[in-house]
Length: 322
Image (cartoon, rainbow, N blue to C red; front, top):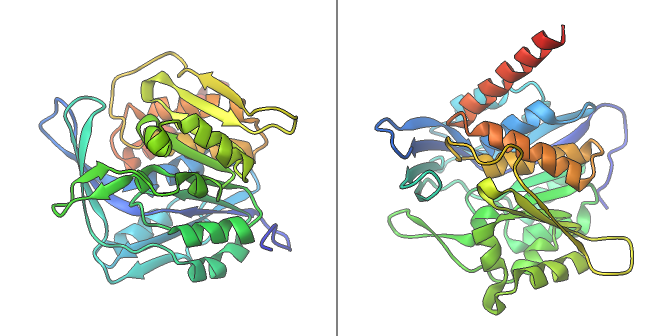
């Protein structure tokens, strides 16, 4: 059993995902934005709101073409306490081109071949952690056997954004939605799982009943199912300790929709939500705080600009408090 580590020192949150170099073609803009993306958004959010007593441990494989730049950037985060598991691989790093046709509809192209993490590799990593955040950025960060290893051997809090598990890739690199085999079994591997509304529709499988699939997942180990609806907020289904069905909650975005670049908003939402639950917030309070942080991302493009915006906001808040 892998559980709370013995000894003193801060608790360690493992952050498993893929660091991507994004090129973002925004709707109505002639100039693309190039910046770190993928797991970078979650790391920026966690760096800002992770509760006291916790430190970040990135579990990230990086292609040799971007390794030096990536490690320098990752180590610049104030809450990253261990870069042991930032691993260089011989494959080209993942790069994504995002083409927005409308403020919310986009086409995505992926190049690069950074591999995922095997169950055997997880056996080496999990004993060093107290909690685990997983984001399927590429879609192959873990296979189902490795995800089940998390469920059976790791007993700290776990969170997974299933995102690109529901994405296939064409020969030209274009990403497109696809059904996922046994999605409920994936959901049972983590305490909290997140999907957007399109992914959640696929989660329902041939029966087209995603909430029924969510109930089944909650009966087998998951505690919370999160469905994000963009500007329309989020829905949560939470297991209860009482006899009876799980509870569903719908939470709108505070202050309503806003213009801007939505790239990474879902990643930021999930990271902020998990961080606040680690700090002791109940799911409703955590979701409300995550809604606010995800909405604030719309003002910036790329993880670096988002991180800078958080620092500016924190500085302004501190100044007003004096």
